[in-house]
Image 1 (spheres, rainbow, N blue to C red):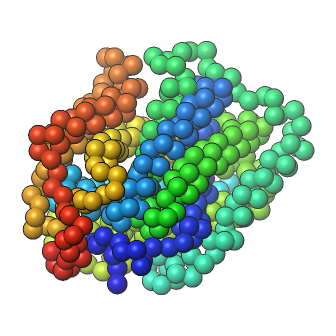
Image 2 (image 1 turned 90 degrees about the vertical axis):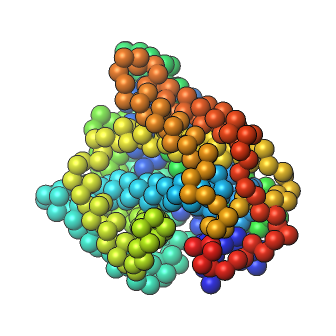
Image 3 (image 1 turned 90 degrees about the horizontal axis):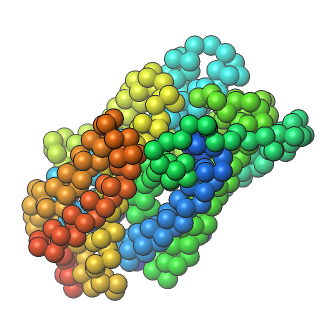
Length: 445
């Protein structure tokens, strides 16, 4: 039985290391190297490291709160969002999930395609198509089940591959470790370290993912998951380890100013082994992203359009969308995409934090999740949409550059403050744990 539409019972929770290793598969995304390199090119290495350290601290604190609540309640993001935003508002959360998963499919798929082109040559558009096609058998049927068993091998391949790339680079360029790029001469409207911090706010979608994963954890493992699985330990490796290696490799091989610098540097350092490291790690990430995208597209279509189709159909839809977006050269507009995504997701995170911090620690009441007890749109949805709209407008306006850069923080404050007010006047509906939360599937779907 699937509990995607139910409060997850204690009998369905998994051990601490099983959950930790499942989540740490996200550590091996090449995206983390690229975002650090992009930031270093923008503001310099020193400010990038400062902003990265601040991001690790903030991610650790917020994800500790979200992971503990997810474990105590057993709710998914969609179930949690029903009480806050209403049925239609919660469906919007599934759409954001799907769109973000497709974005990462596009980015990681583009990385694989670029790696193949760098090694074998050829038309990049054909490599994009090859990347989209070869992964379909892994995600349409049951083959992805046996692929998951390789997690224990894939993570070490990625980790040791990066270490090997660093060692080879040190040998080939012994003086490169002291030649990292300095900050550009032009100063932006905000300090460089704050710019980096804001760039990493664009990846707050990781917090929504944390919520969905954390529900699988046992209550007795709350502290372990809050610190190790989803907290500061994970982000030290994910942000700092990946990021500093990415910056070093691109600086040493002289590829830091190019859109594909990370791929070029790894291929130059390790040759065919580097190609293997890239393909293996990114394929694993993409199988998970395809699953998240297809299931959330299915949930969105079912709830809004009452369109019930097999999951493989949504896998095909995901593939088609991903290929079309790849043709736009995603690596050239990644920071813009992060800015938009950061605004919308940051608003959700702020609202979730306000709700959780105002709720009782023992979770004697759960958010109401039953469709027939909820309205289509709740006041929280209006707060979410209005604060996000303001954030996007601030991001896109050019009259006051400082407001454009600070848009994620402004959005966070507006969403959190707005939800604090509306939830005081119109408190979200709650469901006492004494009630039968495992209601019939028709009411929950």
